[in-house]
Length: 300
Length: 188
Image 1 (tube, rainbow over the protein chains, first blue to last red):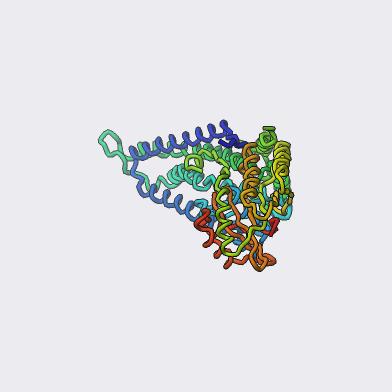
Image 2 (cartoon, helix red, strand yellow):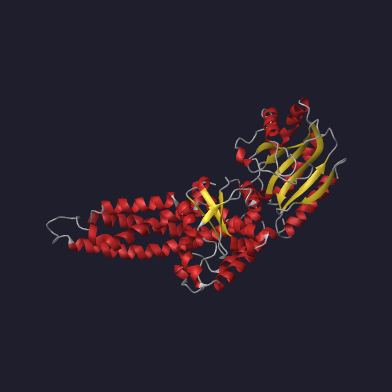
């Protein structure tokens, strides 16, 4: 059987699995509390409906929010050719290609499944990076598509969405629940639901951010193996991160809602709180890419 | 990649399917009977990876092929960061060419670079001197024809005709959007 140089990162997989399990346990616990103490059917339906809508229309929403336009092969032949070859190498269907006209250097991939996805680059990134570096960035984005990251992050964050919904609007929809004679009215069990919701919201927020960081690292890894040139992705990341720090605040504030999908976070300072960050620190990404480079260089 | 692999982020780059290449001589016979001669040339296209290991494997591979009588190897780098090893073989020896191509593929795969392989081409010539490439996609294990028609146009009609001719001999790629255009491939 042919050997492959791609060694999966056991530690990363384990951490991702642990976070996933944690979120799953949280789901179950929250569901139990909800069912025993309240009658939040309306809330549940609305929130799940919102989460589904966000997932199903994710690429349209993302493209509209940054003002990206789909480009045909005649309009951007080099870009399309690069993506064509990467998709042939990775054996995946080719996503829609879009370009956003903005000086901010960044790239993202969205879409509910590999067959209905979009990869977008900004004109800023196309100006700053050379062909190999841009290809590394594209490979990272295609890895997000192949790993179904949009679906997974939507499912993971929909728990937080529900908890957040209850925390904010519970007062207006609450009530119902146990009408046993033991309880004095509806208010006591409802406060329990509210408190639990706040805790769940906070914990799921941290877990979802952690999951996002691990998936970024995973996409870096997959992308580097696809192109075979991890050092090019490293230099692209350095170029982009350096530039992000110099971009005036106006652009960054517009971009913050799109943060989770970008290749580099649209934040001005590294110290945005490591636990709250959607992306791993630059140094951690560079270290991982250096390890991939070493694995590729090992003699047989 | 399986669903569980997706969730756990355990992605595996797809490995190449090598043995299907040996059905090309059969296709060459069918094409011959329709007037498309084998042009004595084929090529392997792969992604250049960084590092000393890759360079070593490449040198070995070139050494391997040039020991065969009558075959020459030439390296061409295209503008997309891919490398073509163009192999020329005697006019009537399709099997020999396919064996050389297979040797290249196996060496790369054994060294762990199977995921770097993109495609292989075997070139044929029509009676009006148009070049037709039978392209093999490693990751899909299927073939498709590619006929450049000057500039950046393809002769789709001829491609579809060739597809019908070889359809019984080799597995043809059913999804037309995967028929990657390989401009600037050697021999075309």
